[in-house]
Image 1 (spheres, rainbow, N blue to C red):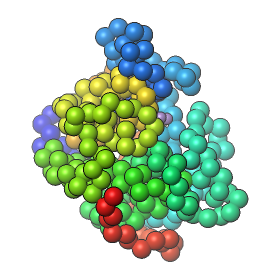
Image 2: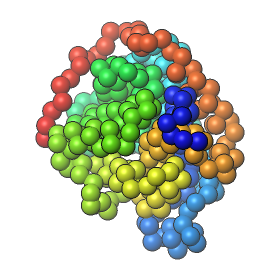
Image 3: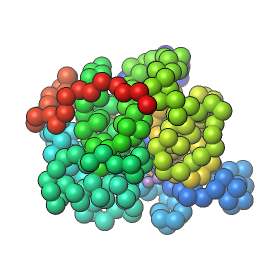
Image 4: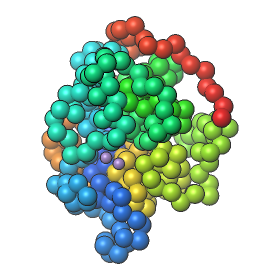
Length: 313
Ligand code: MN
Ligand code: MN
């Protein structure tokens, strides 16, 4: 199917399934090195086989997809933006005994439970991937509303992560996703990325600096480097997860961009079969429901912030 013929639904479902598949596939290699992966999987890790440090069942997903689904559930329950409902949904998720939870996410959700506050204090160790990784439902729900994308993305981010680089990466992924969902080209993405790099030179990713940790700068570099040098959902995800490190999160984010770019029909059928059926159905239902939310997305509660201006480093 030609990319030009893709509908918004093809792209949005491609993004969400690509995201979940990148998570499920990458989880096997999370915290491994590229050498260890190459030694373990002849020809590279190319199938969803589970395992990894979480001993995941094949096709199951980790915190990345689960938190995105929790965020999407809150958007749908509110039929708009209500940050407290997002926080409550994260609480419900944390209480569901998830397979894993990041340090900053746990701390932020606990702070909300104890203090009721909706914003983490600015912190040097809040530059992990947690905020950027779960923002896809916001990008879908605020399509064509760039100011709402900024406002809602940063509000959900600051529940657990409050750091300028996390903010910048969350917005960069959000904007790129929206450009692609709306049918924009790779060239449009390049122009958007140039603007981000002008504000945040440390995000430069060509040549690839070679780091794959849970630091959001490493993840953004790894994901963008792979996205711009591959031309399919499969090649993007395989490229990223075989570099190891935070492989599930980077795999999810590159799957999100590639799925939005090339559409759901470009996802290898074996991966669609290998992804847990319950997860796939939830993703599909949520994608359709997010796309049918009222536009512009109603703000159901007073916003905690005015829309910020971009800051340089
Ligand atoms: Mn994860
Ligand atoms: Mn991860």
